[in-house]
Length: 399
Figure 1 (cartoon, one colour):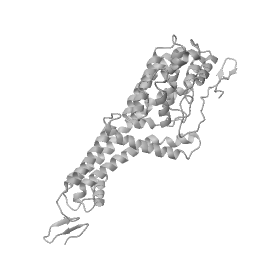
Figure 2: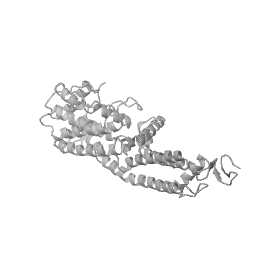
Figure 3: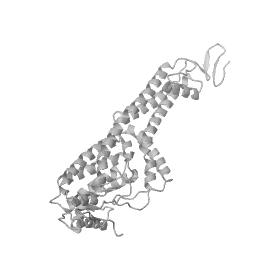
Figure 4: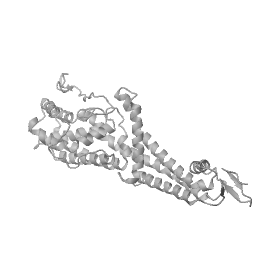
């Protein structure tokens, strides 16, 4: 007699499994399951072992990161201050890594469960057998032992997936630490949140304008490293700096704005490293933005348009004039040259700042999930001999 939905025997005494003769394998389930396992394995290897940025196998982990980001932004709406939002969003990067691991393991489990269906009484029992093999070394077996090879493969896959993800973490955090090294220095160089004109003004205030040449060189190397690591491991984009008002996007934007202003206002005195810094900076932004599918103009015209207004630029030039920065051009003369540089990176920088929910610094665009108020960098009072304190008056636009 045949027992529907389970094991039994027919009139000739042959063992049946869910209405099938035991030992009769349905190739369709095995092929579909193994194809799913193989596709998931390729995606995991492309993400962890041989990352290739926008390669097709990386679409799955990128989709996972976007879903986690969307959920995190939704949750951040519960908080009112930027500091509390930043504290909540600090978990976005690590949560994305855990979500990627969970998705990989889930797809492996599903694939092996489908492949084990021909040896199981139901899909549920196949799922239990696959999960047992992947996570508990095969404590559950099917009613007939024809699936040993699949269960051994499932056990090896589960252990390998977890080991690769654990080995992936040091690479991620080493790249994160390298990125944050220069970002931390920006508090003294340009204030927090970072702003390009403030960077130039502070160097003039302490009479170290000549140090801007090596500074631009350091940021050229930094941009090259960030471009390589962040397109190889896109989840790094969403790892936030340890302090709320720090941001790798704003730091790079401020450095590029400072270099662009330096070249536009002081074409003879500006160091050549400013050009290389700008070139590598907007190359890095384009490569990272391309991985995240942020739209941008590949070959923009030097005359613009850009979103930054001339009034904002003129105000920044006034800040530099107030601290005595040596200028060779007026704001009107320098504006077309500044636009010619900024048109190469403005939209990408604004898009990335919005994507990572960076602080609302000057010249950094809007944030869909933040208020409209812009936070200006605080400049400490200039202390002169004799205890006299000098506070700069021109600190905020009149508008």
